[in-house]
Image (cartoon, helix red, strand yellow):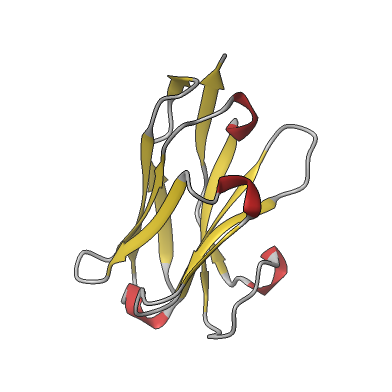
Length: 124
C-alpha cells in the first residue's frame, strides 16, 4: 500500500505557473503508474494527466495539453505537475492517484490510491 500527499497548491493569477508535488510513502512509487485529477465545485472529478511507471509515456486531457507537464522522480518517490499559463477554469482541488495497472486509463475508478488533494485557485 502507498500513501500519497500532495502539496504546492495556492492562489495564483491567470497566466501564472505552479508546480504541484505528490510525495509517496509506504511503497516505492515505481510500482505504480500515476495520475493527476482535479475537481471543481459542483463538478465531477476530471482526469488531467497520467505518467507510466518509468516515465516514458504521458497522457493529458485536451484542455491542458501544451500547458501542463507531468513528470516523476522515482528516486525521490515524487510525482510532479508543472502548470503554466494557468486559467481561471483550472481552479479546482488537484489530486494525485496511483494505479497498480499498466494500461492507460483516465477513469478515476481504476486508480487504487489517492491523496487528500491540494487547492489551486486561479484569479482572473
